[in-house]
Length: 359
Image (tube, rainbow, N blue to C red):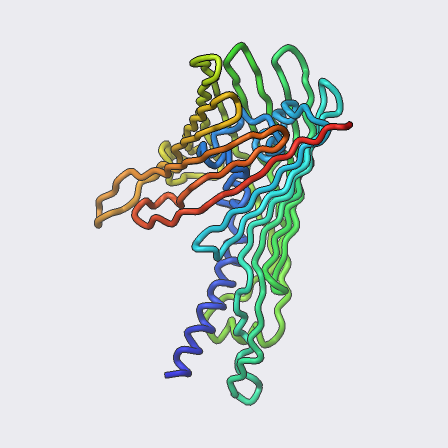
């Protein structure tokens, strides 16, 4: 009985690693950790941000929005956890205005699962089970993003990102990649029109693997393929957005934004599904009191989910958030789920933003 349980544990661990390495060689849904989003404000609005974003998170959503940073230095950070705390997602960003027409930013994103048991060497050369041989490793994805924004004319701003991607699965495999993003925002009265192209020239991750003899034997014994060095290509994604602010009174205002995510990597399970282009819409609303207290709602991730054999129904992901701004400090919170309302696997997102001015 014990031997059976150990075998199952070994198989599950190795299968998990095998899935990661196998997916790394596909072109669809590549670097999807960069599709989650950053910032409590944005996630409370279901990621509807490319038009209205104007703070340190612009380096992620749309670099053209960095021109909205008016302080000498703006610092932002976010933490959230998914799947009951198994996966952790973090963001840290810095933004600085150079002058009235230029701004720069630096962002760091990490999504990882830590303390994964490695049971590939659980059994020693004599066939004896030794729990001291069980080690732990992390599977984590990292992104380093350098951003620049420039004001070109009345109401028009453009921006660009240069990003370095690093993905690592313990000591077994790692990848390095490089990509470029480009974005723009055009403001006219209360309206903002925006576009963002991620991975505009495609992003290529080069994977390499290092497996010792014991790990190779474990892979073969459990029927898993031995991973080989390969490349992973992330195709461009176009995000179109439009936002409008409506002042209901001298103290109360409402911002609404609609985004359309246009993917180019084939048919996806989204509202408008086609090959090679699929369109995923999402909507966000933000209410403001004295530009100090905020409440936010959003809807996105509209999918067809199979309920019974041959029958499907539409589902969506509702999001909610609140925020408060006190002098130079802004605190934001968002409550999101993973798109399956029946599972109710909600995640709490916390973020903070600090504006620093010279004395």
